[in-house]
Image (cartoon, rainbow, N blue to C red; front, side, top):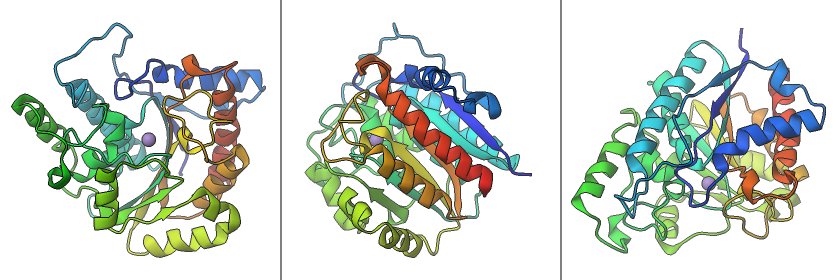
Length: 313
Ligand SMILES: [Mn+2]
């Protein structure tokens, strides 16, 4: 029998600001505050990531904390694939977005013969590499890790051999049936660097806007169904910075023009009704940047509806 498993990955070294590892605790606090029993009703798997706030690693300026992140991605992949192999549905709650490469790896690992699609609901494309990143923060490189992308054709810099070795090793953690960028779709992405644009154009990655969803959600659903018609399963990554800064007060890299909470609920509920969807993830809640835990309050209202939709499937 398929059951929901909440997978907690309280990690944050892929982000540029401190605090995203506290996002899951902030969600639990918000749930208690709203008298929501979601965390009591659903069983959780806690991924031990060994993170503490005093960790330091300044070795790789253009791929910060890369070996730590590789470790957590590997662990997350094993946890997510185990949940799937047990016949359950993983609802991953993570800190920064970098560990989503582990969730994708977990889905690929559990279904080695299937073609996996990815719906990336985010303000950003997360298609950078150490060769192109403006910051060196790995949460902006998740889809490059998952798909094995270097993007050196439009590189901004050369990187140290040690960093390039670590980058190869990190990409090497992905299963052989790695993600193809032809099987990715963006929703809400609105802050993109030219190097990412280059890849989006090269692979013709659909980029559906907040406006398009608001004006015609059914059209968006049709686009999703059409784009993933040859995929066997779909993973959804929901970065809370896809929402508007009026809602997303507690996240590291807010961008104007995003989804409202109502949009985010409607979008995720609509997508979760597609039977190919086998894993959903929410990331980048940072209570240290927030005011009165507003971001996590919004997160809980979305999570409640996501869990309800999944329970009805
Ligand atoms: Mn992201």
